[in-house]
Length: 339
Image (cartoon, rainbow, N blue to C red):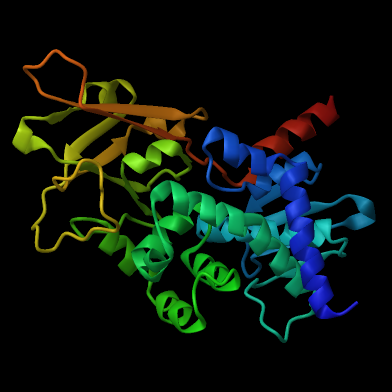
């Protein structure tokens, strides 16, 4: 079998796995926007261990027909997801035990590594998922040449910015020259540009820019991420956004006050016109640690008018809590088998 055939088989296998595990249906019916490789591994009986590693990004272990996946917790979460998907590629493509110091394989890599990489890209960033998120967000082909839009797309798919750029190149949504220019931008610069006050979160946190279109989704951030919420502004007509329900949901919210000449929009909010106003949404420690979906509701109304509000925005978030040790599903399975 030729290398081209190997890569085609890997992409087809990824599609089969997405259908067989229900991952595709989860996106289409419940509002989630990313494929969870850890849950896919768990559903196939493959335990996932997350731990600090000195050099390795990850490994696929298959001693005596007992497969398992090891991933490095000391990498950004998007890289953790891609590493897990890469190791899943080795599993579903029938490869032997392998250890990976990197997964950005070029043409000189072995056929097995290139096939596992092809599987990972098609598992986490299939064309239909990219189109699904772009459609819901109102992004067109031209928007993908904006680095900030690509960064926001990468957050919703749960992958690194770099991987998102090259995935868009793979599915012919970006040209080679555009991809090469966009991928050269540092993630820190993107995070600063996504913030109206141009300040990035500490450590490996990300900056989510949300607007009313995100009501379609359940976003899956990490503790430490920052949320900039852009809402349509109709203050000239006497409308204000009521924040009463935000505190009861375990969040706080406040306007972001910046020099207008320095504020940067990632995409226009076209909901009734009149421009937009930016707020920073901050979860409490309890909200960020909760396992269930957290919901926040905001209403725009005239304070003196008892009639129905002009607009309502509801946002949903489910924090990812992947920590060192066996993944939650793997741990539960291990405990059940030990009884």
